[in-house]
Length: 287
Image (cartoon, rainbow, N blue to C red; front, side, top):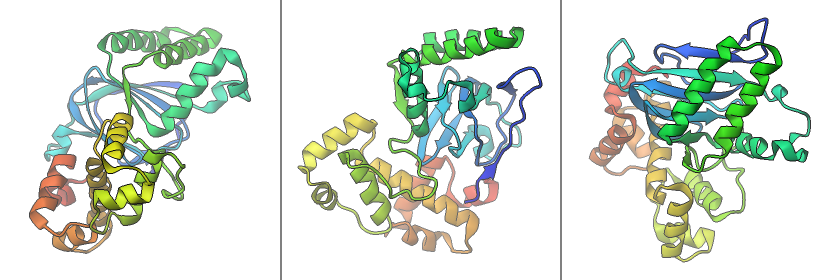
């Protein structure tokens, strides 16, 4: 699946942008800028790197630099031409911050926040949403250092929230998705990427990670808020989406290529994750 590389042009009086999106029509894309997305209307699914999560009004997402992403509105997914989803976005580059920021105590929390954003961060606190929305809308009335300080304040407030989840529980790897760390969760993902086209069992995964199966399931669920096999399904379906767009394989061939021995189960999981059947996805896809 090709990724559209967007070049964002900031205004002449500021080094970062505040953009209002009245609807989401952009395809699978990425840009150098970090992006704070405040959802102000509609519902749908958000794809960030290798992760998928529902969104609705009242949610906030922070997306890292050069991470492919897509906001797929339910309306568009169901074949409608107009999207009722809307949002306010703040887009900024790492150049907005001091060099060697990680060594400055004043920026410790913001530095940690931006590092986590490479996974995609979803914030759920409705009170936080109202505060951040108000702060973002105030940006348009500010100039110069006052505007930069407001960006710092927004990020600082986000960094203090504990009501969040990582959208993709492993960092998105632009070149090699198998180049992961040594933590059990990363090892699980590495195994899933290596073997998702095959039959996968919990016993095989546990032996690969060298952990007790039950303990591994508990720690994985605690660390990702998803089951191992839910993540496996998302990896398989994402690959299926790529094949639907970029290959001439039939749906049954794609199901088999993605590790499914049962076409009905493939169709069921595909619709659960993308909100469309494989045929509908191929017809109405915007990615």
